[in-house]
Length: 77
Image (cartoon, rainbow, N blue to C red; front, top):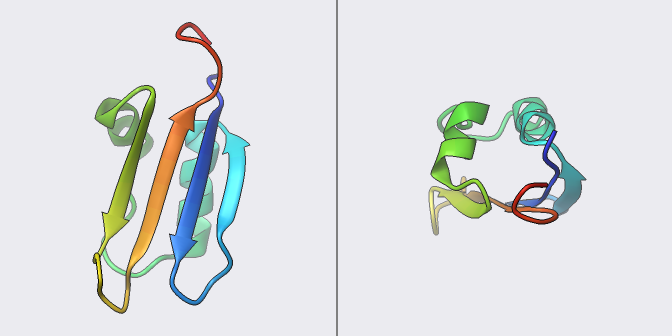
């Protein structure tokens, strides 16, 4: 299992920062029940970029939230 450092920021909520697997990050997104579209599935997140990436929902809007992630460790980690 590859660990990722990730951050979820939601207007009006405390920022969440963790180091877990992509699958565990996806579980947190599901529990948060964020506004808008369903969060991307794990396979999609891995396909976006295996090292790092970000996603922002409704940029500048009332329902804005963002997710950023970075792979922890070396290329083979």
